[in-house]
Image (cartoon, rainbow, N blue to C red; front, top):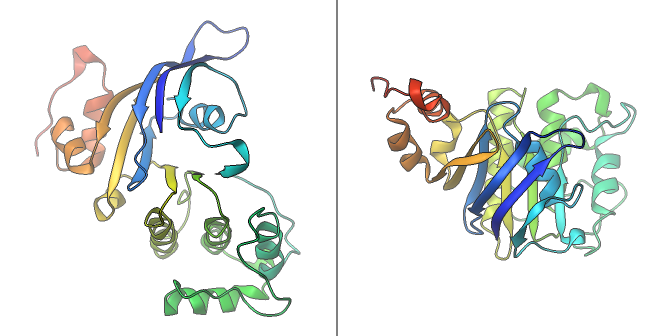
Amino acid sequence: MELKQVSYSYPKSDRRVLDDLSFSLKPDKLNVIAGLNGAGKTTLFEVMTGMIKSAGRIAGLPKQKNVLYQQQGVYFTHTLKGRDLVRLILHCDHSRRFRVRKNEPVLTSCMNEDERSKMTGLWGRPYGQMSVGERRWLLTFAMCHMERELYIFDEPTSGVDPQSRVHIMDRIGKLVQEAGKTVVISTHTLHELQFYDVHLVLLHEGRAVFTGSYEQFLNAGGSENPDAAFQNLTAPQSARAVRPR
């Protein structure tokens, strides 16, 4: 999948949120979109999902029914139980990949013992009694089991505890390994990327200022600290200076 000269400006604005943006997405890697707040990450996702129309083109983009987009801040009533949320999502899957039985947790062969225990514990628990991390994991788990060609997760680990962050990223990492699927996430938590095979795209002022692996990102940013590398690559050209390692 390749973006070719994609540009977008909001109505009544001359500023390009996306400015002649071109880069490729890798189907066999975890594609990560990083950037400052306002860099254009969410706008990019809205273009990729067909929510807004842009100039340029995206080669290889699946049909809209084969694209999944997990946005931040999706509201579900707190009286829903875990099983209700999983059923709701999986019953929306046009592939009908899984049958959800009324009173039995969804347990699959690819789940480890920790995930099985977590799913069993959340199955009958009201959504309002779950932690933020538990909610996000359950939602991500269900969405990862929908049959799609392109999966987009907007900051899936934002605001969750370290244990939940590991569980969520591991679940998304397993999705990357499935053939025929392209997975994209956005994140501000750069340190965790060292543990995954990622293709990183750094957006700044609507443009891709870096694309490559995590190691290449550190080298380009001149630091073993990913936050410092990020700062170096997004600093104004006149102010850029390689920080000490």
